[in-house]
Length: 238
Image 1 (cartoon, rainbow, N blue to C red):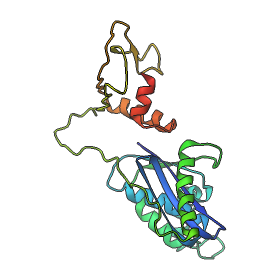
Image 2: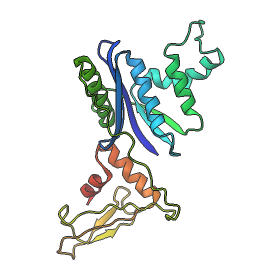
Image 3: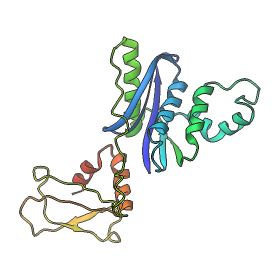
Image 4: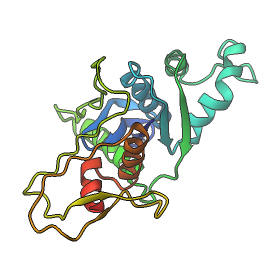
């Protein structure tokens, strides 16, 4: 499952605007316009997230602070389509081009939305908001360079000979960590513990931890919730 935040920002609404989606500091994208509305920016953030992950089969968990976007996709879109992209009062649906593009991207995708309150310190939402606003600010200043991000960087290996269980090659360099021997804990003893530490080692160690797909997903979710990379989060646990 991919967990990502999507957000938009419009200075003046309408005005200089930016959108952004965010997975972590090494995997995000942003863009914008000289003049757009906040709803256009919010819709585009989600649209570009779907486009960036179109080649993947993972379920997409989207954290979004726009109830307009969530309701448009999950409640209103089907009815708008039946009415020829018109609302109940017969008036044309606003932002129809973006909604139609998003509707096309949803085909065959597994996804769910989570509404999060904006501007209350939610780590991933704040990260997306900061990047969207940075783009809007850049357009307001007339900057020649717009922060666009590295884009999608989290593709899984495509080696057909890879084992069914995913292997997390979380190499901890000798200069990163002074730790005793690593012993895998019994999950039944402590559901929050990934492992326990032995007390019979004195030297520095390089640690390679192999995780199943389920265990790796659990580590990634916990790391994202903490606003850290899986490697950083694992070092903290150790």
